[in-house]
Length: 406
Ligand SMILES: Nc1ncnc2c1ncn2[C@@H]1O[C@H](COP(=O)(O)OP(=O)(O)OP(=O)(O)O)[C@@H](O)[C@H]1O
Ligand SMILES: [Mg+2]
Picture 1 (cartoon, rainbow, N blue to C red):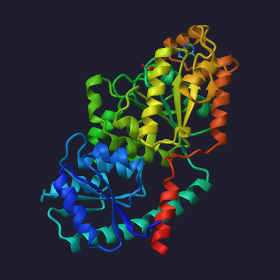
Picture 2: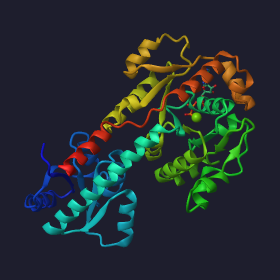
Picture 3: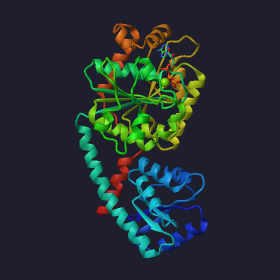
Picture 4: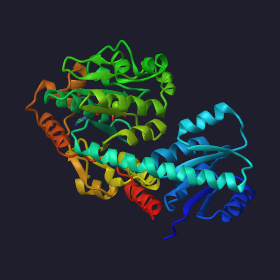
């Protein structure tokens, strides 16, 4: 394997890509291994190529450089992005850096500047990545809080029901739990808990310039079961104020104060959804015995695989598993191309009455079959500490480190 620094060039102009390739061919120890003509194509190609550095143009069609930079930095922590732009504008530079770019070069850049920036960014990134990997490994060894997300590609499968009852069941077991309603348009966790929140996540992002655990505290509502709730906004049109960056900061802050962060989500694969996915430790994709739901969840899994997520990082929950409608669990597993991790019984009347009364069913009767299944589910949560797993992130860091040492 070459020990040169491997670079991907992303620019919508074929001429610029060609001239960057030419300039860098004169730089010793730097190889251009791939090109892409926009951010989306770059992400696609990153599933195949593993560059150390991405040279990223900013103004591009389909997916611009800033959005692509943010995605790459989140999904591929081993890759460093250097922005390359004609924009000599401080605000632009700041946006790039906030998205995760490690440096910013103005076009046209000469060979010396390009090569020395690539070498320096590569060196610093390797050192930082190694430090982070070590810190992460030691973090995994200690008892750490868990963020548990309930997901689905279609509504009405029982995400909120499971999220609310999971949160309450964990609190019943003595855990400090916060339930976060990131179904920002039509969130109904507070309805299921019969809570009237004074403040919502919208107030939080509007009023707070900095979000930390103490600030967050003021926006949580407390339920009689002991769980705290970060409620969804009261009006659907307010949802747009919540951005992916908020999601990450909010969840990371809550992890500092609680043993469990349980996240309810909307059935929409948008930036907020991916931020939740990236910040969670356990991801449960909820399905029912319904072909339309199974088809959409399968499509979502295919999308995740395309985006280079490890499908094993998502566990499948089959809600209403014993509904008699012609499908069997093994049909479901065949459609989802995955084993079912947990099954929950179908009991419409019992669940509906719990929702209508605003009392989670695990509080109404702990001996009811569904309650028992929910308590067993939360007990299993305690047992394993699965981490986010994208394909080979660690291998990437190790090989980068190995190249640096050689
Ligand atoms: N185990 C169950 N047995 C019977 N009915 C259930 C079960 N779980 C949920 N339901 C019913 O399914 C309906 C939808 O549940 P819920 O609101 O939790 O779904 P959701 O996935 O959060 O939907 P949305 O995406 O629209 O928010 C509820 O009315 C509830 O009564
Ligand atoms: Mg819901």
